[in-house]
Image (cartoon, rainbow, N blue to C red):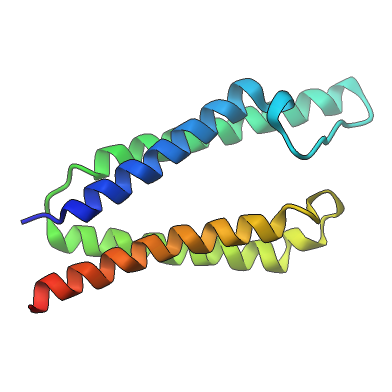
Length: 136
């Protein structure tokens, strides 16, 4: 028996990743809060290419989450949720330790840490809910 919360969380996280990835790939200069211009045309091309590959990675992650949403094995769901919690907390630690030192990211890293923690908490809520279902 699969948990309906797992499907819901996976689909919501997938939609966020797919939307963010598409925006990064196709509309990065228009929506970017950080205007990393680069001093030469080559630097600008490298920055745009990097943004496009980051967006492509987010689209791949969103697609993977969408596929995983249909897995019905409760043990796998629990394992996957624990992995996602570790991943999001790890990203928050990375942002705090390293990204806060980058001048261009000074205003962005606190908001991103809050987002990482919020995503981790959604998986923790799923784990608590599934634990409650299992032992009731």
